[in-house]
Length: 188
Image (tube, rainbow, N blue to C red; front, side, top):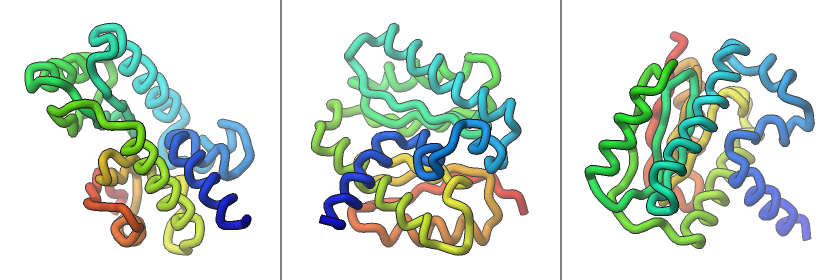
């Protein structure tokens, strides 16, 4: 029964990737911002970038693409699938032209949309990594954002190199992970 509870928790945490620290700590956004290395303004701006960008892509490409938008310190990560190279390029240009974007990392694949099974697997992988982050003493779990797409794990955050190495080791040794992409900004 205990294993089932952990599995359910991992699935929920993976599905709520951007909300993990709030749920894990059981506190509101104020406490989350206090422990985040981004300024409060940047934290709020990242949330707004994700929402505005996702909405703009959704309106423009109405159900023809599967695009996840992640913003960390105004660096935008695009993951998912699009039907053509032209759409992949157009989405990156659209995002790059939005205000307050520092950089765009376009990791979109030109392919059919991933299946529900694949997305569920990715959520479980992210949840497992986050649970393993909680057990380590080398960094705080809320300092590293985890995004998983088709078995590839993207790690984002404002971290020290020692923290990045520890997070990368944990992610790369988690079952189901095929590849780890470090997208950190280093503090040292």
